Image (cartoon, rainbow, N blue to C red; front, side, top):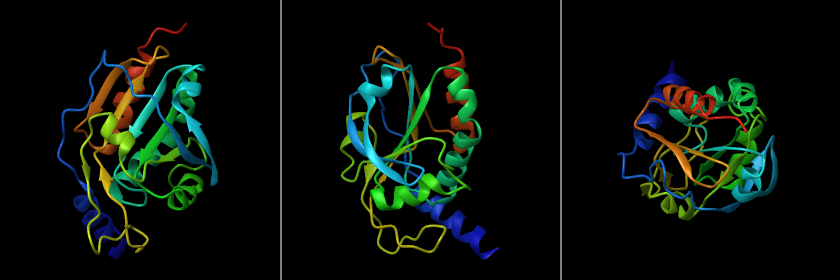
Length: 191
């Protein structure tokens, strides 16, 4: 019960107001960032990922927080469906690469199914016109570890192979965000 309550408190702490994010038809800002897949750090390039097909770029406030845990788990259990539709997934947050190394391999969340990228100064999030809020003193994650970074608003972008945003998804509960992203990817023409 205590863990559940802590998760609810943290989820409310990291909730952010929606902002005017980039919309369908806008060019998706290219980025390269340090990322982690199954606990292993590497350099991620959106441009390189787009050569393989559409990319689901989802921004989340912080690893190991209530809503972000749900969203990561939902992406992980649906990762095969995204792959079947020809899309790859990249999560982006202001977490350090050390936190993302843990989160990306955690079997309860990312489970090594997709990479997560570190955007410590919020530069990538801001390039997508997302709201970035400063760290909150004393905020702790669901493990009881202090969160020492800022938070980007939860928004998912579907980026087509041509680098254009096909869909922008925000203002939804974490699992609903994933469901809508999957529906958008599955509705895309395959070629």
